[in-house]
Image (cartoon, rainbow, N blue to C red; front, side, top):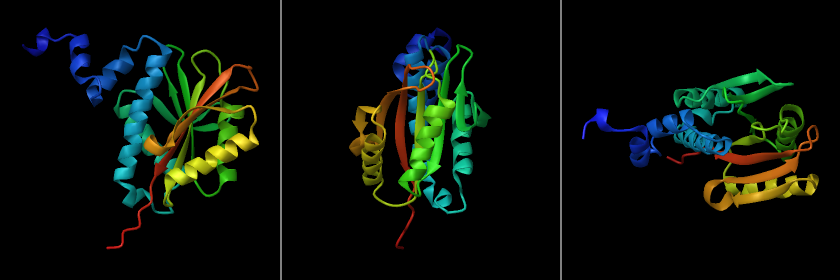
Length: 208
């Protein structure tokens, strides 16, 4: 078999989870749900890459803007058009747009306290998000330089639910993949807005 004999479908069957496969899946995505799935896979890989270089980005002088710009670069390298600090009724940290009308919003916070995370959630859900068709998903990205990130994320989930009675958890994978998902009605449109809350563990405190 030669490269000229391989169809896109064949390639995706064998290499759909590779970087090249994700590029093709993004290009040929037939639905909004498929595009969200590919984007989240690429984001998860980007977060893993940040963890791999946490000795550099764990320094206190590396703010959320600088870290988020690295995520944007990784998204663009994967063929996903992403912009940092785009104006969408405010300056959103990461915006992904597609010609199909798709839009995804990411608001990033370096964790310093839970009120700061709540600020990010409110920015994402009441300032940037609209929950219109093709634009009803976003992510709160928590860059965490302390230890025990899963414990912090569990506490954030508890505080979020106690502070916002319109928010409900739709998936909880804190213990395995360090994220959970919520939905709530957008105050503007009244349609459901879906948020993935992901914590990126960036502690770097080697003892030797």
